[in-house]
Image 1 (cartoon, rainbow, N blue to C red):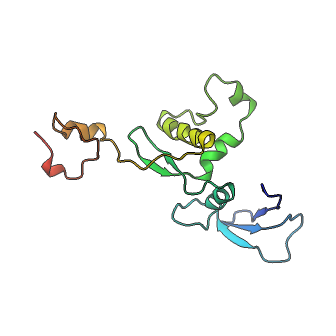
Image 2: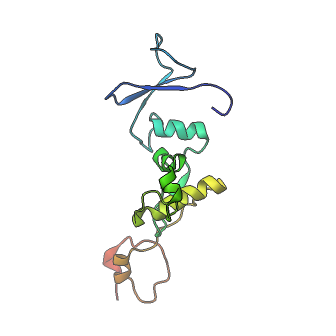
Image 3: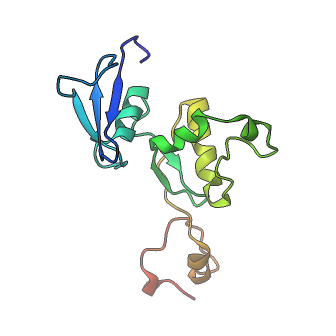
Length: 156
């Protein structure tokens, strides 16, 4: 860890719990783990490996942009993992290694994660812009970019 302490993570094959030992562990432990975490990310619980590692890194709770519509969501560790290991094939590719999934639907999210790592600033909370479907039902003089909440009152 950044302060020089050691940390050991252990998971049984096929297990859904990750044990955390706050010291360097090289053999099968004889003492109980300092903490037990779930392997699946859950933004509402701190008892999972993703939130634990984000806390260790000092970026737990940071928000990233999910889409061009302005939706934000909490960062998870998988967002960082794609940037932590970039093999030589991805490095030499004509596509940016920042856009690891090459899925256009993930591009905004991947750029937002990279921006967070470079600047240290999360995405601000904002109201989402209307979707293409919502735009079809908005009046022509509509200027509020906020989401439509009552479909019955919108229209010509």
